[in-house]
Image (cartoon, rainbow, N blue to C red; front, side, top):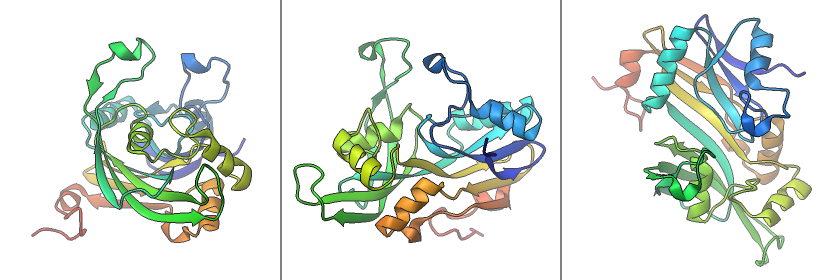
Length: 263
């Protein structure tokens, strides 16, 4: 089994890159599965780990896990109170808008009750088109096929929020079997060697649970996404593994748009 890629680790937490297709932990919806991220990481580190947030099974990317119950409690609270910045990259159908806030309420999808009985909850996602490509092939009814690379920054944490928001706006993520379009999913699988959901968590920013520091972690994409970006001419948008630790007060005094510190 290939070891998980560790991006940062100290005595309190570990930040890693979750492979696409791997469940974070055991679930009633996948009773036949035998491999899970939590167990694999526990065996790799030789100690107990505590999940504090989730990524969907088909989604790859940066995740943090605690190494003690006290750190887990603080990190879980930070996620639940929306004190963690999360950024994703997605490959979508069509030419997405340059920048937009998607503000569509969403019903929760927990499988416990029929959707019609679930209340619609506020949900907001900021998106930015980083690049786009036009391929001279007829995938659907048009003579050319257009796709975009989108950076998504969710402001709320509804289940499948990015996938549902982009689909509702008319730019479904490639490889999304539920919210996308099968003809485009097949085209990427058969002709571009990308047979999966093209969504990755690339960046996390949060306060360290046990130190007076702000932790910022970026993760390089896996080989499937990296090869796709190279093929589509998006190499300049490939993230790299990077970790930055900043004193908490200094980090929070920075202007989020420019990175400059306020006096």
